[in-house]
Image (spheres, rainbow over the protein chains, first blue to last red):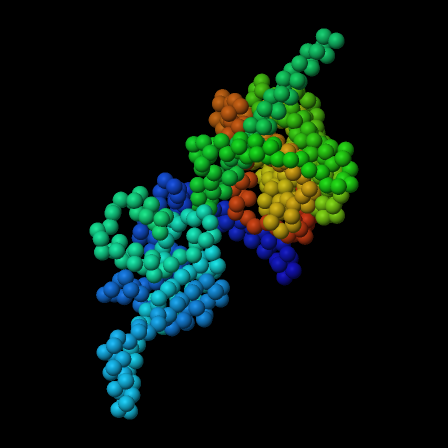
Length: 195
Length: 324
């Protein structure tokens, strides 16, 4: 009797799942579409915020044109696809006064205070064509200076254009922020494309 | 001679009508298929060519025709090109005996049901030829798979059709339709619900539709018998498949859903036939985007262990009731 139940009754009962499946797809068929018709419509900024585009730098809260980055190279070391390039800034040449102070300190046997290199990077370039968007750089950044951008409407015609200078991008964003941004949808979309 | 001509001319007109109907259906069904698939997945489907993408199937057809016809090296040229034609040609004949309306019947045949079943079996021959002539061992294996499916699903289909002809005592589709005249209660679906169910499932298998579309299974089994075909060689197989779908759904309508008779007395016409056929086609498309594809052993198990015994039981029970 157990075999009969297992081989005959159960399969017939299981057929109900087919009806359930049809019900689910039927319900979806009647629901409104969720796809955006791209050239005629664009995604509103509310939804765009959740989009994980290429990596970009975050500016300092008080000075949005300078990145929070401290040139520690953690992102470069951890990047599996080798798409980030960071060049550290060199220490500035000491001015004559500083040189004199340094010489005096050396003679006196005190600690020599050399002028320190600024921490933020000189160059921060990024090759989007290599990036796999794994987010390892973002996770490993000790200064929390990287994030996914929501630069969605971005089209290029050659691979070379996918190499972006993130510092320049940050500066651009900072000026856009400070200036009263043009509000119209079309203009911002065009600006995004250029960026 | 005069009688011969009298018979020939309507037949030629009907054949041309069937050709137009077939091509038209292929376009409409391709469009519906993609549109329904889109809406079930909550995307618009084809949208760019024409308003709501309505010209998309036409453009697809032009693209398909513009492609190069390729034949593999050492493939048998005659059999290779014969296969798609052989798959396509019988479909035209299948439309002949179906009564689309009170006067809209291509050809009054006493053995209409038999004609449809006999000529729809040609598809198996076309498939095995296509696989064999492709000079490709996977093509042959795919053809064997596809044929074992079509042949298997033909048997329960035949048995359920037989129950209807037992009940009505005729193989003439026009007569079968006439017997269902009147209100919705006269339709044979109420007298033969089990046969309807078996017919519906066998129809899916016979026309290679999902969830039984192992004959193509484009994503995991690389198509099989029509792998080597390009351009309209493939296009003809494709059109034949849609043609068979329409024929099977029309047949189902005629046998179980009252053909061109409406649900209330006095209302009849080709539009009822069309509405019911397209309703069934919609169910087929709906099922395609709902159910996952079955495995091949499951496919054959459903047929041999379920459909065949059920159909046989139904046939014997019907025979017994009629005899009593």
